[in-house]
Length: 425
Image (cartoon, rainbow, N blue to C red; front, side):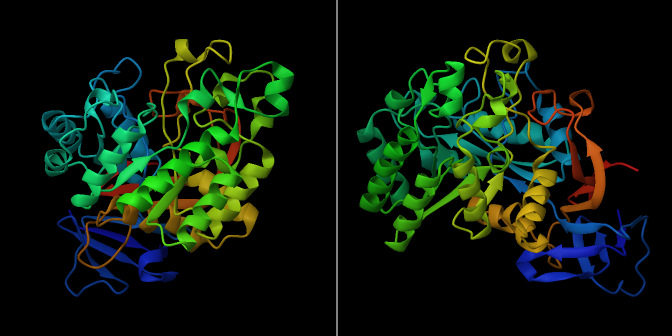
């Protein structure tokens, strides 16, 4: 199909473009930026006047719930949600059932996702067999099957010797390892940040040192092994300071933050709102503000949706018993725009954190609109308000702390490989 996107404000952070430019697409590729090639006749014209045209978003953490948890969400429902949010590439953590610890499982997931002709799925392989923290997986074979990195998701890896050997192995093959720092014993039984709200509500706490103690060990082992380590969903000011110091000392570490943690704090738990039961927990307002600043300064490299659909029955329980997680694929863009507007961050910088910067962390050729590149494109109206109503979200998971809130920034068109995967009027 030949598509002409005309009249939009094109923002491409990788190529330092921020201007009104037309985009022409043929055979799934971008064939021209600016003037339409001579003789080009479009099958479809998308009028983007007054809208933003940017690379398709790249999400570093989206649980698709397949295989194993189809009663919570299906691959089809979450792919539709991704495209509705302008997400054209996403990383899937390995904590499926069974976990992504065998090449056949990875190949099956990629095959099923490819057949849906929606967003591109990049599996994150399991670091240990069945995520039990005992035996390492065959990372080299899993990488050949399509894994772009390896992780233990939110499953505690309590044996530091296993982690040390995993990082040694990964360093040998230059394989990135993604870790969310949390000391299992310090966090045991906790559900909320160790602060005034948890104390007032009588909720079991998770102290900041649960994150920083584990982070200290990870940074030490990363330095010892030379492995490429990516830190997932940091939540505290002290963790950010540790990363800043480690980088100053030459550590090869990167990190991201969940978009929810840029806006919410422990105060939003209110009266035991289970939709605010997240992993890691919502921390203090000071921590939240430190995360926002670090993202603007690129101490934090990228922001992700941390999309985690949860079954209604598992969410509508007392706070301590409710399953943690929130839907996020359809909210990644407007919440990123909200952060940028509130903190005075230029729009190209904000979009870089969910396009080219995220793609660089995944090691994929995405997040840009270069001539000859795959035509993965997001068109959105930056001034359009919409109310977050769970019933209208395309994700099967309706659990969100933003229910009833008006956000600004609505995706109107998402193209994947030059095909229109989502469109609204």
